[in-house]
Image 1 (cartoon, rainbow, N blue to C red):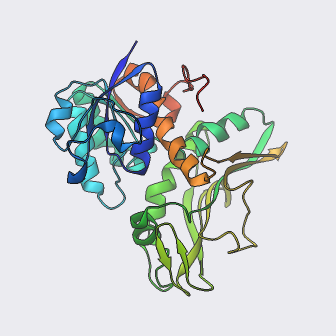
Image 2 (cartoon, rainbow, N blue to C red):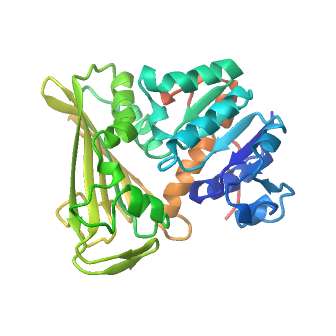
Length: 353
């Protein structure tokens, strides 16, 4: 069965999602919505470095929804436009169109109050929405849950992202949201009280639900290190003395100790913070299950262009694209990873380079 899909946004994740949609024989690209006026009227294939696809990008939301797609792959940024993103999703759902989305990330596993408006919109439209990616997403939902299936006893589950973001060409996220390249005494959006919990608390709560663990609280912790000298990254200049490395944790606490932990170790240069956890390969997602036995599983990232951040963007995109058939088939409402069957790359094995 072929599902007709609209791509909503052609940024870093969206371009990779477009390539992924084109790669799946069971998906048909029905439309592309773009926010940048310079992209309006261009062929979708041109926006993703593909050949001519015969689908023209538009800034008219009504026009793409009028094509009556089965699903929208929503990849527009929500970090600095949360209200607008929520309005977009509500509009799409009430139009009777299913959604797989990379944002807003708190919808991966929201508490009842925060998830209620989107859940209601999905029910009103008789469709489903699923928010996921690589992190929050696969690296800290199905991957760790699968590993716990071979445990005798568990004392802690720790999910880690250990990456160098120097090739991540997204200045809004790196500088404005995460605070890299900003003075050390300036508090960025990400480290404002409660924001880490808003973004990644869903990870801790979902793992707790999947493992049937009742948490007492979720704690935030972070630390940063400055740049030893001025240097360049793909997103711009990082001046000496400004933030250049970030480490944070969300700790799900039970009986006074952390039992489920989400940790990020983010550097802009490999030589920064040498005493912090180091990645496997160029960059990795790591799951540590402590108990009996102890397990460590590293998911190493590397794109065919030799860049780990490219692989991360593609992983996020394909987590969504590959889930389209399952989300379309699901019962209406706001879904979580715990609600879906195993999503695989069915139909993708071939001889492509």
